Image (cartoon, rainbow, N blue to C red; front, side, top):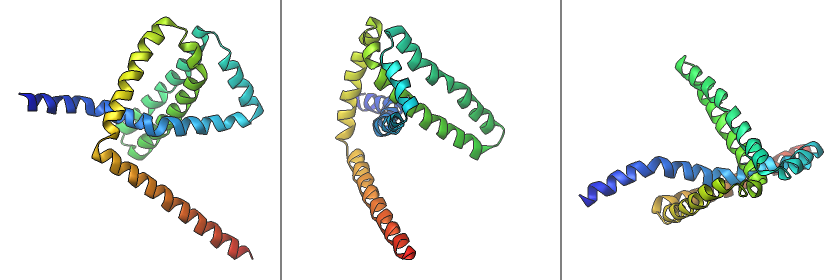
Length: 174
């Protein structure tokens, strides 16, 4: 009975863990990409206004752009249903990446104001604790450690290839 319970728990937690892993590996880097836009004066002004928003306006500033991507995702489903697999998958992927980047950056900007909403703080604090506990468990697993090693190796390989490419291009110009 305990074994069956363990298997069922693992099956139920698998999609949640996948979501958390995407968030873990995607949230910070994608937010950093959006944060790089703050070098532009117009974007910097927009971000400074968002940071100064009162709590309920911050909630709208966070939620509305994220919800605005729902029609894009529905269009992607329509494309998939119509047999346009490549276009549908491409649109889903682009919407997921853009949506995550936008949500991550907006959350960074609005979190202090959102935490002033009692209901948000009551919901967010236990969620964050639970998520952190799950991530500690996931990070201690063999597949996670192997994926992390693979990621680091791929990053090093990418850097070497880029350096080789730059050297090749530089030599051709001489």
